Length: 186
Image 1: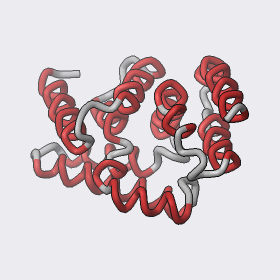
Image 2: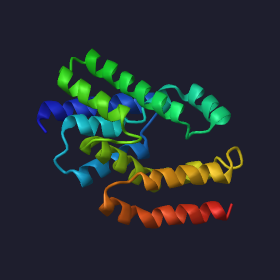
Image 3: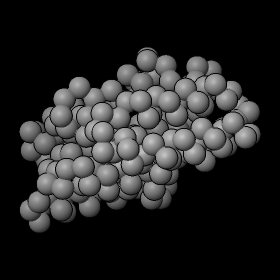
Image 4: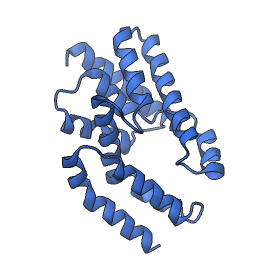
């Protein structure tokens, strides 16, 4: 990456951290995993990695209300989550005079990070899942009894089963099994 791209990534990290009211271990770990899966990841993929879940802290109250009413696995919510996140980042990048090619790619990656579909969207999806198992398990375990064990297990199963990179899946499998074991003991 060029120095200009490094500065842009730094600006994005500061923007996301401000919206999130501090650093997010999940966002940082997703970026780490993207670099691990694709060491030469371009600035757009790195920006998308750090900001892929920007919709959640940006719309925290409405996200919490939605989760309580519908759960966190609904297709309509996933679509809204991805689309809104893509728009938030596209607007931020546009306001910072980033070239349209980068804006379009970041938006596309965020809009497809839950299900993938192309090589780089799959990398982001797999990095998101790996980071989820490293950083977010306790958060979801703490959501019981507000959410049923079945719903939480569905989330764990979804996040693991969607990993397409077999090396990543092999590394994450023990964390997935540990998460299921912890859930069963609640």
